[in-house]
Image (cartoon, rainbow, N blue to C red; front, top):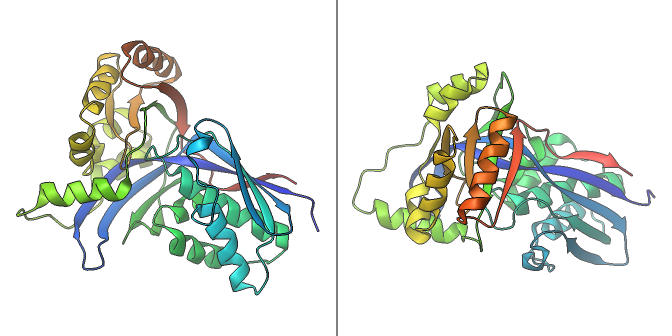
Length: 301
């Protein structure tokens, strides 16, 4: 048996998050345009006598190390399908912001799934892995695939999208997290009594991605959860204002927040905006990244 397997897996930003009304099952239909970005967690799988999770890196103390961790759930799900015991030590080297709306937990689930598949030699097909990902959570399939994709249903049904260039981003990381269920609950409260349209991908946004047109993409960024996130965390409005005042072409809350994402012209502008955000005192840290980025990838054994 291989001694260990390490998989690198990216964060994501939602350049469009169109949210429909609550369904009877409590979920919402989405038109969710994902872009993978160059902030990564690494998940290392090593043989063990049982299932064990460890984590190191920024805010690692906020990551659950029990069976609720998506990496643990991924290992258990894969082992269950192949009738084996999930005996593995999964170590997460954390660099994606925790509880920040950038799918860090989902990334760890996808990374663990790919690492365990390689470690145990289960030989699962891509379709099987994606099926397990969809069982684990709405964002997990995209963490496996990376690049750019339109997610429909709960976000788990993916259609790959063409991207014609590199986009530059700055991510402002807030103090503390925001609960995704709480943000959706606030969305439902704010939308009560209104006619919530069926979610659909923006043609202008898809064209901006296809052509690599940063200015066009800046004008098309939208997140239907942003009003709910701002309602629960009003201080995020100050972060958004600081980023755009520093020269960002556009800013929005990333997913359910509280991380805010700023699209900028180029690498130099990214450094300028990141420095200004830090100086503004409206965020805990600012991270520079590019997109698109590859999905879950085995990087060493």
